[in-house]
Amino acid sequence: MKNVLILLICSFLINCGEVKKIEKKVPEITIPDSLKGKTLEGENILVGKISLAQLKHFSSWYNKEYDFYKVDPALIEEIKPLLKDVSITLIMGTWCEDSEREVGGMIKILETAGYPIDSINLIAVSEDKDTPNGIEKPFNLAYVPTLIFNKNDEELNRIVEFPIVSLEQDIFTILKGAPYKNAYAE
Image (cartoon, rainbow, N blue to C red; front, side, top):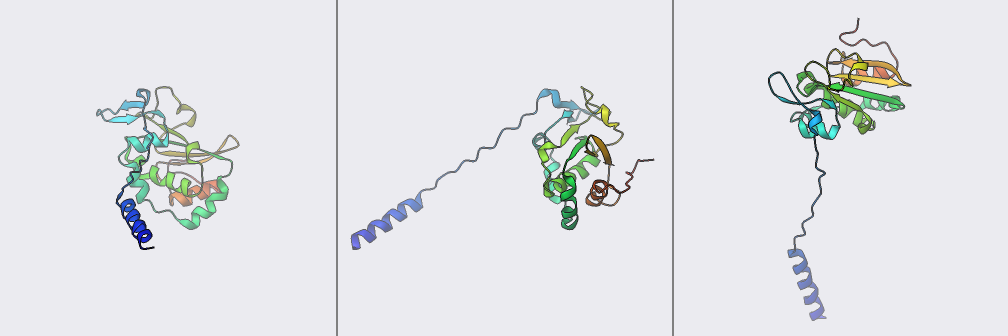
């Protein structure tokens, strides 16, 4: 019995001494040359239809702003059921301070509300608010960021550049169909 106990203790000590390295494979994010552009000052920017993964990889500001934004849990619960059958387009500039300030919060709200983030039509524009292939043209873009909500192929409304009350409140107002005017609406 003593030998069995010694054998178990030795086996335990040997196994505890082994450090097993677990490698987590992180998918490599590529940004094709067709999505790369430059500002007038020569800064690198993204232009065209991009993925959230590409934005996160490219932008030093995205994760910081996403983490910094504190969602309003009560409004998130009100927003959740209203997102059903809604399609969302977010047009932004990776060069734009307003986009840097607002986009992380916009994405965090939608993600927290259970919206399928990968289904957002995410478009990055140049300083002239255009893309090489003109995918921004149907949206009558004036300022960025612009967050557009559609249902049944009809635009419900949009948040342009900054919210009027708060991101959650403006999203809730738009989704429930209440009157809403963005900062530039006439």
